[in-house]
Image 1 (spheres, rainbow, N blue to C red):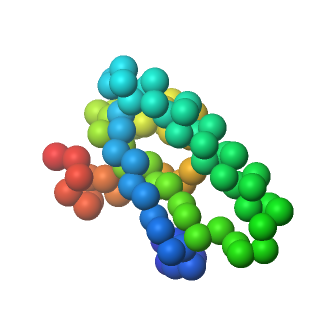
Image 2: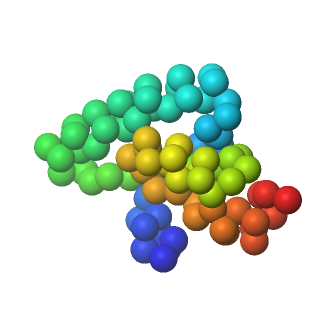
Length: 89
């Protein structure tokens, strides 16, 4: 459930990206490194985790989506939901 995963977060960052985009593929590992460093930092911080990144794909196929999503440590909008939400047409 979205509310279970994100309801207690103060900030939710939507990461719009796609496997076919070379600048995105270059940026994603940098964002993943920062995300993982932030999560490690929070393990020693009693204030809790107020931030989450959510991947929103512009990929054309579920295969591209799944391949690209597998490189990301954060949650994602499911590929089928992108169509229902009107993000993909």
